[in-house]
Image 1 (cartoon, helix red, strand yellow):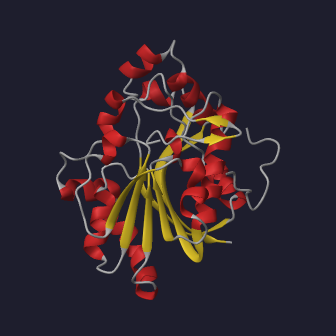
Image 2: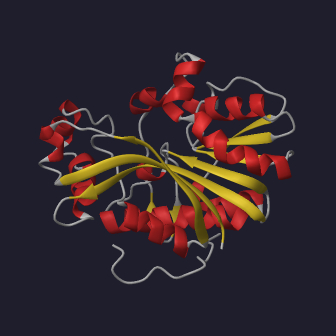
Image 3: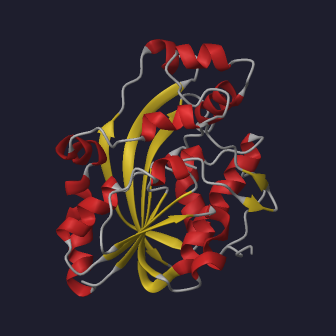
Length: 273
């Protein structure tokens, strides 16, 4: 099932390892060895919450929960479920579905009476859940892992997943997106494109791996802020709030070859247009 975006993807626009089977291609999937980096089961809860900036997210979410205390969450790409566990501990009447394509990560979830674990195909969310299934969909540090066989295909895959999120949200629902944003030097979009090429190339995989890219050979695609704003708009979302979590600092041997001007971790809190 393919969902039509609120606005068509125009010319010029070019899970972890979640799989997509839309008409634009299939997402590359990380191996279990690569997914070990995303297995947070050994982390202390406080350390995990600081890294995910859960208190900052709750500062926005809590006002929504006052109106909808029995909200149903979808933690898309939720992996080990630690983020959902924190939310369920804070909101007594809420329930959550942790959806991921990795059985390896899902197997690390702790049981909870208000939590459902589900292997999910990101491009078929609307067929899996149906319309108006969730109050809040969380897509945290996931979009940059939705990579295809080209940069243009990758952008279309990301757009497709955002459209699917819009389709399964209730009219008063919200979308929460956390992403590492790369703004390029000289040409905004070039930094993200160069990163995709360097990490997706099997020829360059040994070099990318030595530079710290655990996704080397599969790929990663960080978006510039203007492009992500456009993709959210075309999927039918308005950004209600934007939180800059941290300014990320990369060493010169990454910044200079990637023509990277600025990198930030940003939280976007969005409503249906």
